[in-house]
Image (cartoon, rainbow, N blue to C red; front, side, top):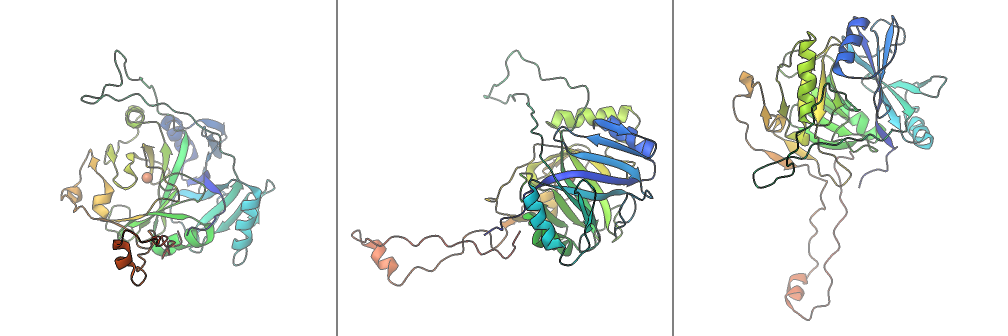
Amino acid sequence: MTSPGYGINGIETVVYGVDDVALCTRYFVDFGLPLLEQSDSSAHFRLDEGSNVIIRHVTDPAIPKSSLAGTGAHEVIWGVRTREGMDRLLKGLAVDRNIRFDSDGTAHCLTDDGLAIGFRVFTKTPVVSSVDPVNSPGNINRVNQLRKWKVRARPKTIQHVVFHTPNFDESWAFYRDRLGFRLSDIQRTFGIFGRADGARDHHNIYFINANLPLPGMDGSYRFDHVNYGVDDVDECMIGANFMQRQGWPPSEWGLGRHRIASSIFMYLPAPTGGQAEYGADSDCLDDSWVPRSWNPMFGFFSFISNMKPFMMDAAPWEVDLVEGYTPAKTPLPPGHATQAANSDSKIAPPAPAAADPKFSG
Ligand SMILES: [Fe+2]
């Protein structure tokens, strides 16, 4: 059984601490985030759903002290649907940590491993999008009709944030046990994908093993990327092409699709540190989802434009359901098999047993 949760409905604000505010502001303008306010010391972008991106210098006193090394997303403020849910959440957190409040009621604290997080009541603005009909052999949905020609990418949502962490099990446990997050998938030895209880995204947070032998990983708690939601694969590529024309470095991997979450990805290097991701066509989940445990490279991608040497070996097709999320097998009552074979039997089959999750995600 899943816990009732607190109504955390996603990422309300990402606060970046960076080396060069002006440069990072120009980057996100080109990336397609709508700029709301700008000064010499900060920039504020607001996406259509009402979520926010704040850029400040990493030494700005408004950047909370935390265990995060380097630049990047130094604080994630999670949205909570109701004040009641937020009060209940904070009551539980206040048992063993200090909580600081802004005058507008926003709460700030640290996770068990020292990451800065916050909470704010958040009423998401519904966003709309329309994707072009797709033609395939024998399946014609567009006749005498061109696809839309987009000029720029314009992300509408913030879908997830990713951190390198020295211990992804421990980092995840806090979100599961204290914030009511749900387990979405496990990428064996690589990390854990989790989603907020009030969100439908496949994941809102991914903790990746900081000790993997991958570029940029040194065992420290570091920012990796934020995923910004766009309509489709065309918008991912149009955005990437536009960024390159503005002089920003191109994607290392190019366009691809993860098997985990089925999502289209386009990661772009960012002057914030880490990367900024255009994301499209991800799976959406609710509490009926049964988490999978994936061979890490099999789950990583179904296709990718620029295969690196370590991607050349085709990964084995290994994916299993995580134990504890499906009904436990219940032994038949004594004599049931005999009676079931008798057409006159009036014995009803046993009711399915409730799930007995090992993971309370
Ligand atoms: Fe991502």
